[in-house]
Length: 339
Ligand SMILES: [Zn+2]
Image (cartoon, rainbow, N blue to C red; front, top):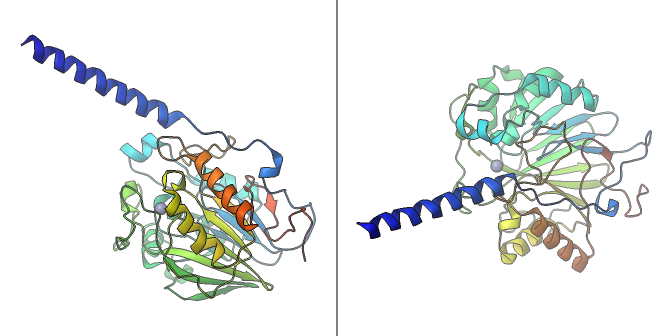
């Protein structure tokens, strides 16, 4: 009897230690690089050309002075307790605040890179506010329907489709999501088949098609990779000067996986610059400076070291995007515009 009681006590102690560890790791954020050289410089004010602004996760605003469009458009960023235990809905006040801060009133399109809530949840509201077309997979359009976005404001795309937005040419290539506990590497994507009417649980926002989005503009090209997954050979014969590279969960992957991801998304399209995205803790609001994902879920320091090492080996510049500020994705490494 005494032995049993002692065993129960030990078990209880172990469980509380585990719980304490989880709670601490969920709050610990690896440091972001402090040196200015690790970050893309802001483009000089008033300079012309294609500009990209990073607004956390995989939300990017593209603007060439004539046409503006956005990937994802995710600004609500509900906290992790809300994500785990309650239903989610777009936060219109946060969305409006972000659009105001970006100076955005009209957009040609908003393009979710897949349909998980941290990519697609707010996009229909962004479309509603800016007159944009919601462009995405059938799953993404179900998110639009759930918010009552009219059919004329939605455009479904499939693998290989091309969408022209002013001088931007977008090619949608269906890739894979980063393997996680709930998305295996080779499992087929789960699709949304009914309109998602918020408030809805995070799990209602199923993955849908996961895009490798090739963006060509005035003879230059960008690859936007929203999730750290790949389909071998997908980018064979494609060119991208710069990759906006989704790195969420990469810090927990094997060196072999990181090698394959780098090869497929950076080496294969011949990129000379990598700008990591999807590294921030998206359970925190955009008001505060961004922090890396908590250590419980990812290890940004490991990601950063792995990318820098491969970049140095292959002569590929790796720099982080500053929050809100316009950057020139094709700027020469010295920071002056290359064209
Ligand atoms: Zn996802």
